[in-house]
Length: 628
Image 1 (cartoon, rainbow, N blue to C red):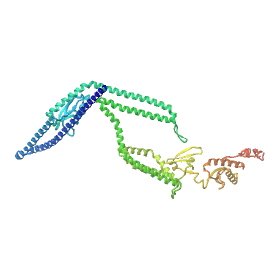
Image 2 (image 1 turned 180 degrees about the vertical axis):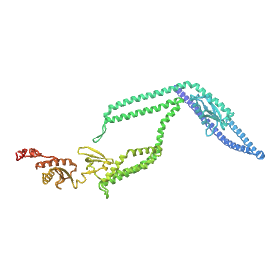
Image 3 (image 1 turned 60 degrees about the vertical axis):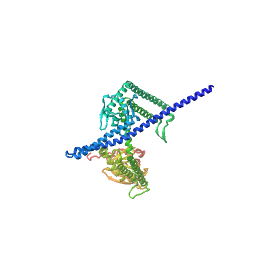
């Protein structure tokens, strides 16, 4: 029995629920249908009113034209004047009929159609909107008026008395400053069965009263709520700042603790690009940049939110946002607009790049002597390529210049002229050296590795550039000589003919007239033959270069193939000359040396003299007079 009772109760509950749900659904459907019907009725009315308004506009234009013609008539044109007055009366009758027709249509809709409410912030319906103005439907007008009233309610500096009614061409407008809150049309006045000015004044009072009531109800509470929101936003931002700082410190501690596991030296063969410590510094720098970027992003988000809470500071938020966003937006737009020029620059660059590669290939073939051109030496290839490459790059810059951003601006032109003047004033010496370097290249006075003499500098050429020539002396001194100095002076090349003909090493000794020249010649030639790195074929030879007052100058000449070891060869040659002359008892006397042989030691070293050699005694000869 209890089971059946429970089933019966459950069935009743389900039936009640179904009935209530059906009624609710039916009510919702009825509401939707009612709104649809109301909207359709108002739309049909507005379509008809639009046709009537079009006719009114045409009548107004025609009326203005007739009145103008009437004013232009003379007093004697009575017949034409009567015709114009008749037409004006017809237009007035049509206007009266139009207003009556519009009023009749509105009266027929009063019982079935309902307007769209304008609702205040407190939920009260201020008034209803029935008709459209221009392209705005009644519903759109109601929502727009609500939005504007809400903006005025939030304005802390609002002056209620400044809300005024202003007559326009065909409407009366309710305005506050430059803002039109709403417009009252002829149709609105007919719906409320009032004149446009009276209805506008009534709506003005309703709006003022509503704003006053809303500000009275929510003034203090709203201010407190806004202050609370500001405090909340600042507190959240500060909390996030603290969390970011703590997280950053923990991240640094973790990086230092585990750096040995994931940071290794970045090396290639024997060269180390980055050590682990340098990599750590780079990682810390990047994380520090990221931290400050997050700080800036948080500040950028927080400040607009804080400024937007109070109505009087909302413009500050917009201004701040524009100050930060405008440069990024402008930069992005500029980059996007510059993309076609950038593509043109890239095309020119890559075409010129492969053209230069082709030219390099041609000159490298000439340098390797695979391609031979009559009258063009192989060592001219790379210097000439450098000149051609410079000209090609200059031509490429000329092609690219019009596509550069700001190339047509006066500032860019002024900077270009300024740089050109500085270059011309400050690089005269450099230009002279460059020109001299080019001339030296094609004169071919020396090449890398040659032993040369420039002025007082003797050494091996270690580097040739457009500006300078570097020479390494026998004392390992690297001397830099400007090319203009090289070109303006004399250059002696000891190496250029050495391999084919040999370099002649020569030195001079002075011997007194008491020694036969044949003995001196033989002694010098024997000394040259003893010297390493001097050739025996061609044979050494001696030249008597001068006959002075006290001595004869003998010059020994010998050939060598190793011009780079002249200092060593000269040193050995001088040693051998001393040895041979001493062995043969030939004294090498200084130019004005006079020897009194009696009682004086010879200048020959002791190890070359006999063991029983003694210095001769003085010889004194005394002559006596006959008388004595």
